[in-house]
Image (cartoon, each protein chain N blue to C red):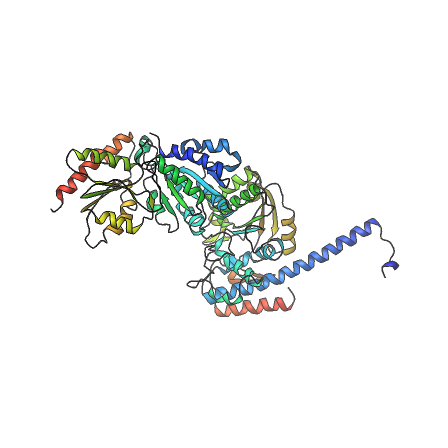
Length: 297
Length: 309
């Protein structure tokens, strides 16, 4: 058949290649979306069975973690190479555990052990109990500093890899976060990507009411970082923005998200920070997510 | 005579020539903490974080996780003041960071309590995987620095500002957790740490004229070996703990948990700083808090005098 095709001109060739790439990218984005929906089912089951955990905060960053875990990150069994993931907003760790389970790194049987005595799945990430956690976090504001140290070490070792750090927006009220932004920007630390899960909520209410971050992108640019903004639930856009990052200096992505987001038209518990879904709310969420999966997203 | 921070600065450079995984994380105090020679010789292994200790502790933890052995240095009071950061990114991460806290105790003098490392031991002792090290002289500082460069565990190295004489013979071998008798005596044993060790030895010299010969023990690392403390304390009727630190949470608490559990327990007394401290010349402060040689000697004599015979 190939021989029968007329020879395409340069413009057509480019368009065809672009369309093909778009198809592959679209297929990949759809695959990541499905895996992220499965993560939502797993993390809600974990929190429901534990009777405790931050569902809203986990759901707001599930898509970000999905893109990192199922697409961007090179995580090898030997943790001395490959990429690093620091979950500075450690209370969202059910989203990370869920990604590990969906990806087959953790046995699915452990889904019922979140926050249980002697569990590897501590309420906040603890690397002394679970090697699949790169950095122990929980008290907010500390993860970015460790990510900076790891990126510096990798530069010194000559290793080409990326250290990702996921922060909350409320967390950016902590002074140490700005010490780390200041340091990494001033020293142009390469191989470092911070992602701010900008869901606008924190424990006592809205970030805008409690202590607004005002002009976050401008502040971060002034600290010497490459800054991008994206819809934090758009898997394709997240991939694009991660690929566009600056390789020679630190990059930060402000991901606009919705706390408690289940899917395109559904939010759990009105976007609450740490409320627990009732049995009925949990069942309705599961039904919704399973319907999404049946519809192929 | 030199200070443990001076000996540390010299030792670190020499040891770093042999071990290229040794790095330094600084918080704008390279001159005061004596890491400046390291910076000059190994600029690529020196990370200047500025006046931002919390970030420096996190950066050090990240470097440690990647196989380096970071020494993050500041005044002990400033460094351990970032307790939540040390607890989580060093302790709960089991990150092999060496926290170097200088200017231990009252010796910072006229700068006063906002700079005095008087509660650092209490804080660091609460972290179950963090070892505490405080050398008493040059021999011990060298050995501890070499030990810390090759070890991988999270550690706190407590260093002094004041000049100290040697209390150990050249053949001394530092062993983690094992207290060392620097003066053998009878009846009363004085446990000391770091800068108070030579002062306790001087007190023992003064007491000789009064016919009193206390044993003086250097407890240079914590947690301390229980059996060694039981053996040393058990051989005496009185125990005095002398520390250049707040009276609560430091060496006295560490040793008290052992000594007070002995079946035939000796009398137990503590000479330490009972308040926030204050500004003043170091010698005046040590005199005020009875942590100078006459103060220690008087306390030992009083302990023996009050003791039931």
